[in-house]
Length: 167
Image (tube, rainbow, N blue to C red; front, side, top):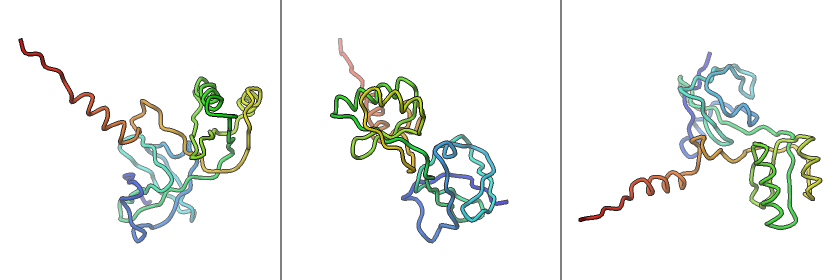
């Protein structure tokens, strides 16, 4: 059976490396070791050193050579819009207070996995809601080790700067 042994980002593979695609839900894009099937129905073993989050456009490196291209599956999601920036921030707070993964869209709207209880709550808070099938790529958690490179650079700068007082 083929084994996928490493995750690489979109800029680390070329089209000629691609040996197939695998379409996965958000939940299935954070794994360490599991038997999966690519989009052609062929089985492979995801066999990573540690649980890793991978996103749409990443590649799963096969031990025999080549890459399986990761695609985000269409999921049952709810797009949430506030009336203005303050209202949207308030809606985001209520979503976050329930520890619900949330995607911030380029439009500034929010996307969550559909949940009828949250839908009812958000409607009661005056949100405009649109239920649809779309990829779900939520923000990484602040402490999950998958933050942006900017956060890592800032953290490094903060730890690298010390004050010295000469007496």
